[in-house]
Length: 220
Image 1 (cartoon, rainbow, N blue to C red):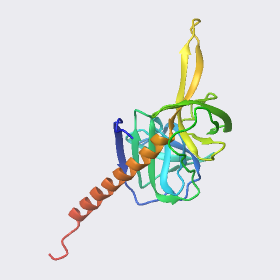
Image 2 (cartoon, rainbow, N blue to C red; image 1 turned 90 degrees about the vertical axis):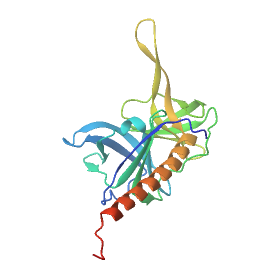
Image 3 (cartoon, rainbow, N blue to C red; image 1 turned 30 degrees about the vertical axis):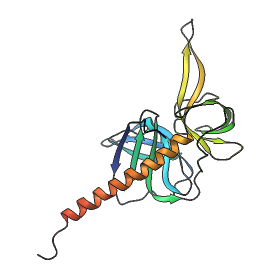
Image 4 (cartoon, rainbow, N blue to C red; image 1 turned 135 degrees about the vertical axis):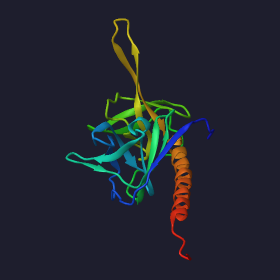
């Protein structure tokens, strides 16, 4: 696809692993100093890959990412993040490949397709109402905290997009009316994973180069 995006990428390198993650997770950005939660959303692991996909605004620069369960928050270590702000999507590369993750659909969806949205309240049925190269539109309405939720084709049982938000319009009486929910579509997610691979490779090459430079000369 055309390189029309401007991506922000950053990395936190560690040696610990968060272990095997479930296909769908809650993700929180936490303040480095206070460990307080800044923003939480959702995400999902991609089948047979080390990636978790989420909405871009869930990932905050200069923060710690964590997986949130019903009772606890577990910090992630040793991950690399690649973010595309214009389309509001991000990939988090962890240390473990997840064979039980969700598969990505072929690039484009039908204009109308029955879908399942895995929100914070559970599985919600809906339908896509339109798609472009960079945007997917669907109903019903989502809410705060649903960002990053996977949208799964009922027929194909693969991910057609990741929730990014919703659109409203201002009525004459000053209230807002819901128009449609929005998502980053599958073709963008595939592009994002491919770019994440390239970025991760460059990062690891830089890390190895730096590591080799600081090693003492064994011949001295």
